[in-house]
Image 1 (cartoon, helix red, strand yellow):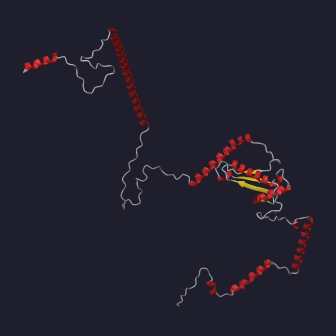
Image 2 (cartoon, helix red, strand yellow; image 1 turned 60 degrees about the horizontal axis):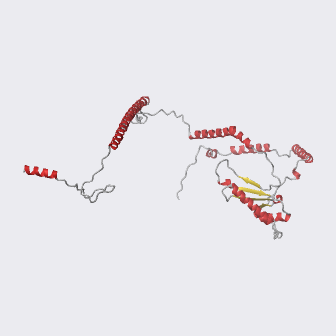
Image 3 (tube, helix red, strand yellow; image 1 turned 30 degrees about the vertical axis):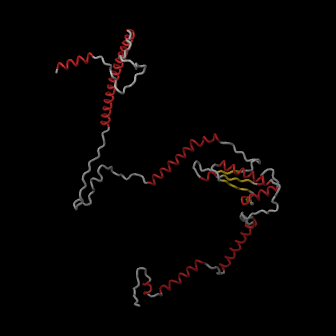
Length: 364
């Protein structure tokens, strides 16, 4: 049996068979030998190519060795640096722990059971670890006073240091001329946001409007309607429809231009329309009477009247016809004393404040 196997091995080795590739393989790039029965042969490389490849491999090996050496040194330096940083961090943590020891809450004792023996005693666990209360803190009212004082000091600093800087922005006052008949009034709340800030009020007098005749001025007053004050001859109107003061002012200016344009329109002058003043309440203006003014003649008349009254009183006093009020009061008090003495004791005792009457029940 062994001889048969040995002969089969020699037969297989002597057989020159073509290598059979697997069923599914990747095709090589390039042209292959499709109808050849001999194995594929490659061209042998020259000595120069082999030496060039060997030199490249040697250079690559040197670069790899240099890279490995540098990376190893870098890793060693990083490890040493990390170790030193960890050591410094541990030392700083120890120093901080030595300077600032952690706060440890005091251990509270167990609350004792309420019995007859400890009734009314303060509980030790309630006031343990607490600071003594000196009752020296301020009340809420005092804190409010301090807050008001701080606010006053703040505005005092503004008045002392920042208000003088506003003098640089001051402009000289120039009274309005005849070319500026419109007067606008604005409202500000000193930095606060308020819905009434956008309101603009316009006032003007029809007599000050230029290039208008008397008939046109009367027409302007009639067109203004309830916005015309007949006593002061002033037309007043306001606007707060828009978000800003400039928009409201622009609207009022356009409205005045439209009124002037309608007043100058010669098609209808409104001369047949009377003035309507029902919207205005005319208040009576009282003046001091001329008869009440103190003059020299009036002063002399008053002096003479007072002297005549004084002489009349003297005459009545001499004739005992003048009524003396003090004497009349004394006489009235003297008449009441005999009446009080004539009252019985029973009635006087019942009127004493300390005594009370007897209660009597009545059956019905």
